[in-house]
Amino acid sequence: MYEMMKIGLQLMINIMVAFLPLRVTEPLMVALNPAMGARRRVAGYDPAGYRQIDWNEMETKQKTVLLKKARDERRRTGTFNLDVGERPNPAQESAGLALNAKQTVAVATQTD
Image 1 (cartoon, rainbow, N blue to C red):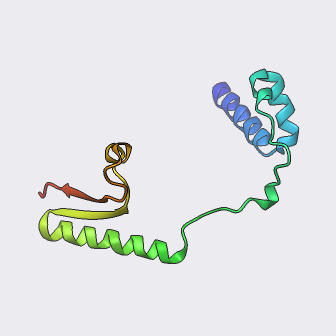
Image 2 (cartoon, rainbow, N blue to C red):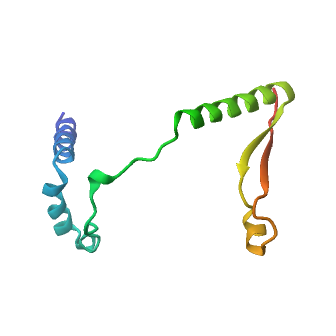
């Protein structure tokens, strides 16, 4: 019973500390780990101006259709080809041979 209460108390303390604002906990963390002091906030950074970049609705639908086609092809033939778009091959790119090589991933699956 003692061990369970000890774990429960530690859990409650961790939850309370996690909900504290960063401006309260940051000086304490820097005091406990001085190396964190070297990583200060960027001067002039405005977090309100941050814009999250995410897939738009059309890109998401296109990826879903692409993966559905690959799944259907795998069911039909046991293998599938998945076109991942225009990406340069790193070895050829460094040699200057192919800047826009089209890659296709071919995967063979074992059917039961």
